[in-house]
Length: 473
Ligand SMILES: *Cc1c(COP(=O)(O)O)cnc(C)c1O
Image (cartoon, rainbow, N blue to C red):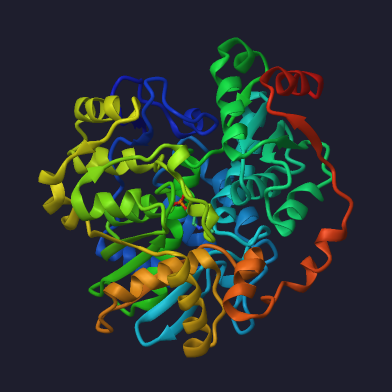
């Protein structure tokens, strides 16, 4: 299996060759040359599989440059009940992504039972083990540089802590993350994890990462890497739980399932699209946004109009506060029948801060199953309260955006699965506002705010961060 760039001007490469990088050299994103196909007979064989066997069956069709036995060992080490251990009472942690029935045909797929209580652990934990393996094979090391406003940074650090050949330098805005998020990251004492609290906002952190990455000489000398949401290894890991969720709520392969996905960078729902392209019987893929509704606008009108970071709202579902959806280019490439020249033309406009209009392709968008909706703070609070009173389930703010939009499309006749992207304990303040009570927290995380913290405070100064990296490698 070779991977090609959405912009069509980079050489086709194997999985292990694209794993450690971000963008393709031509500025595009990698996708498999063709999507492997799962037939009806394949699906029947996969139906009873546990998470690990299912993951191996799917990933081995997309990763052919790691020996099967090694890939199996990496997967078995990743998807364990003691890693994804924060299942709700009554759920089986062995399911890795247990399903929770809300009412007939309406379900939550629990993706947030991993170490940092958000769905990003599903992919990032696999990435950590894949990175360690591939780096060892190549005899290389990498220094991952990232910026976070909370979820990505913690998921990356918990995935990479203690991994040989990997160091993580994670920039976060000083005193701007929640106490819980700060404690999760800063309490890590591992020698290969460096938390840098920047005097500034998230955009300052991101600008510093960009500035360092744009210095080609520095980047090469210090082997600067990234694990951001466009990394193909993350997308591929996320494909698996769409299959797992599908099998959990159907009895046969003639049934179709709709998935509603709380979305920001379009990474999670992009994996749903790929699962569908590989033969999973998906009906609708419902993109749920918060007040930052770039994607909802596109799926309603065919106009893609990124907003720019100055026009990004800070909301109570902060992990969906994006101004442009980095993975969206992958979907548009397929939508255009894989016309890379056309992708280049559209993104020539986007990369200059512009927009594009492809409303003539809306029938094709619907054929691919895509529809959308958006939510806001009031809807989110209301949905959290309703889920609690009607179903007795406490959900987080991002999942609430998903459930709110799902209910606009749910017709009770066919299964609808809402992806749960974080546990409520992660967003205590908003939950207190909605329910008047602090959400339950896994017992082992009680008191995490009181643990000793390891971090360095720094001004938003590119030279200072470069010096810091140089000194610690
Ligand atoms: C990252 C994140 C999202 C958005 O996922 P994308 O793949 O960027 O669309 C939604 N909810 C939570 C809790 C997240 O951490």
